Image 1 (cartoon, rainbow, N blue to C red):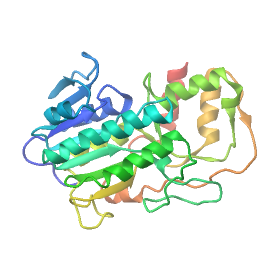
Image 2: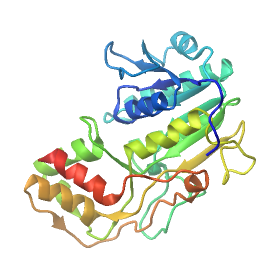
Image 3: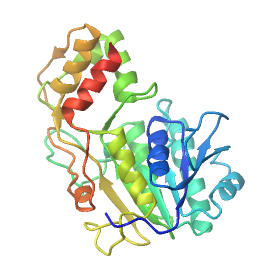
Image 4: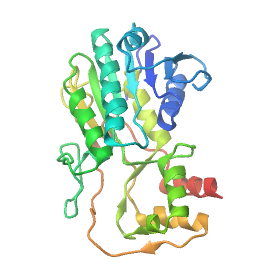
Length: 304
């Protein structure tokens, strides 16, 4: 990591009250940035030093232009948890592009988008996946396809240095946490959700470690480079995987079912057996601080 810029960065964060967005806002506040925390409901943004709540719909071009004016960076985190492909596309794709284009028009220097490793093709038989891996096909499901299309669209937004963060499963406590709250509820209520191949890899990262990299890129603490392996390409669009040590479904599902007092159903069958390779992020100076044991203990404690 290089030293952050000498003057405080001004960063806009969409979805500032969400699991990932709120952690990014906190990480930016810790770094001395001034943050415009974009939310749809008043009183839901983190109340932290340097954070200003901005209520509005970032998909509205006029509001988007207003909220990004004079900012140094934009961090986009919003994607619907559920809903059909059309609703995911309206919010996740159209909305993200509206504020991304506004940021480009306003001369915002850096754009950090929280994507997902689900954009990669992870069919059985394929090995490890790095940033040059093939993207998911149109049959990969609404979430993967829409997120893939957002990435491809952001690559065409000229101007800012764009960084696509691609985490696998994001662990960390919160009501909207898919892996700590939403998925465990399904596992509790539906026997079908308790089925897994025990040794299938479970790729993951802790939300605080993801937020740390997002904040460092947003404030310019990660230097740009002509080589994407050394840093974000200046004025380009660079994908970077953000993953911790590989676990297994036995680790994750075993922890959840034990905490809930239900039995997992271990199966055999074809599955993707690779890992999400995050060597690029490490070459940028990032390393996860939360280990598997700590993350699983936090997960289990939250379910008791």
